[in-house]
Structure formats: structure tokens, C-alpha cells
Image (cartoon, rainbow, N blue to C red; front, side, top):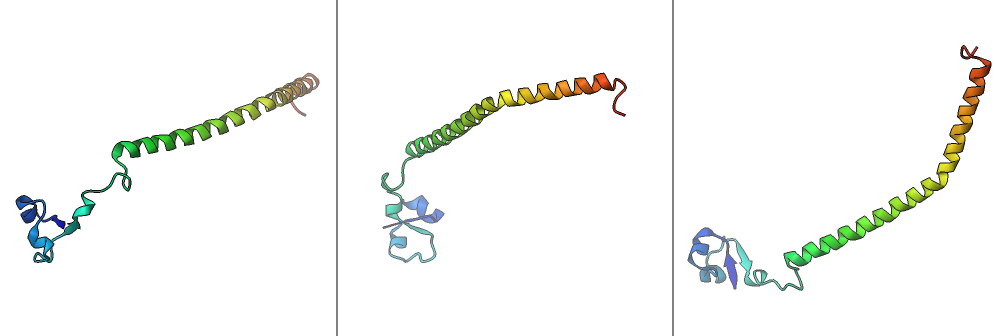
Length: 104
């Protein structure tokens, strides 16, 4: 059986016998089984939304782990950067004490 999508047939009935018997040749037809899709084949909207939410949770969890790793590595480097900064500040201070008017 077929469902006809033409306005003239849709107004008359959900299933057009003329279309089903191929008398309305150029009408746009869909097989009736497409209207009665099994939910195992095509999930309902709620199931699809839950699937998308699960995918988002998985991806956000992956990103959170990566950001946490970056922060932990940065914390390990922090003392090195602080030490370097103090050394440059001492170097600047020594240069300024030898050359109070700037570099010669």
C-alpha cells in the first residue's frame, strides 16, 4: 500500500487506492511501511536526545581530563618560571646598580 502526498488524495484519504494501483502515475508516493517505522530501526526523539546527551557527556569528560592534565603539568613548571623570573629581576637590578643611567 502507498500513501499519496498529493493534496487531492490526502484530503480524500490517507491511502489512495488509485495511487496504490498506479493509476495516478505522477503522484508522489511513499510506501505505507515508511509511516509505520519500527522504533528499533529509527529511534524515537527522546532516545536520540539521550544518545546525543551521552555523546556530549563523553566528549566533555574527555576535554576535562585533558585540561586537568595541562593544569597539573603547568603547576609542575610554575616553580621553574618563578625562579627564572627572580633571576632576571636580580640581573636587572645588578645592571641598574652598575649603570644607573641605563646601558652604555
